[in-house]
Length: 123
Image 1 (cartoon, rainbow, N blue to C red):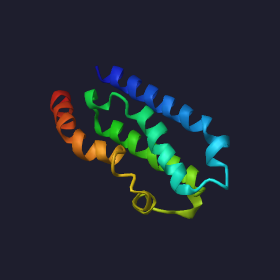
Image 2: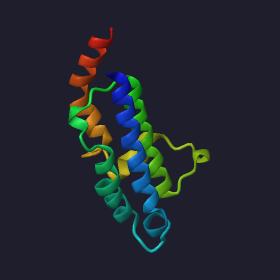
Image 3: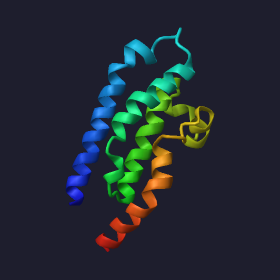
């Protein structure tokens, strides 16, 4: 069961990454488009692809880490922040208010119940 969930999560991340990549030259690299617009499109397109069907997921801690690492990676690419800049994820996420309706919202509000059940069933 957990293998199926891992494959499903990898598939979702792959689809979201593909959606992000398709917008790379048309949107993320364009200087004339405002950063707020780029983040709004990211929330509407990429996050919706990533989190479609998420209410039925039962995730483990490693799955949550996987989701939480994809999100800041995309925002860093949109904002043109390199890993050598050493900016914490909290500083990256807070100005764009991506915690409302994004991965953090899912993990903080939906996840604890399903995570508890999955941890109990895997113990």
